[in-house]
Image 1 (cartoon, rainbow, N blue to C red):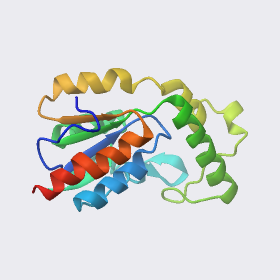
Image 2: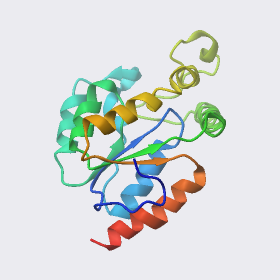
Image 3: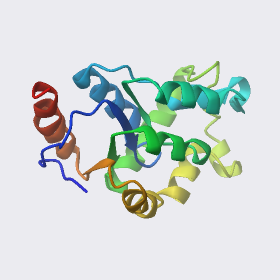
Length: 189
């Protein structure tokens, strides 16, 4: 597993961004896409239909996306993870501390709810009081699953030895990696 200053062995073309809810995966995926010249597809937009329903076309769209020569997306949804990992060349694990990710998530959730921002396919964040009543409220979900990547990313490294995995543990690691090893890999192409 590489760190934020380690050179990349290849130019990333098919990139996954992993991390807990609210850590900044989508923002980082967009920034990676801009650096490598690849479109970013937000995987939540493929997964969630109107009314937060599962879109039956999800796995077909993931298959179509990952057959392209270049792409960037988030490594989410158990049903899609195997396909995503088998077709990616790079996975960036955004492993920031809970003291960073949880306040970000709370601010984002409150902002989206108060502004009634449309997310995917007409969906909006649940009312804030759902935190107390909804088992899968986004903040409760984040608290319940905050450690899951500590197990599944290292296991992924053993399953896919050709997959380059970069672990970023601090906010400054993100900037260091984007402007250093990632930019260097792109220039070296």
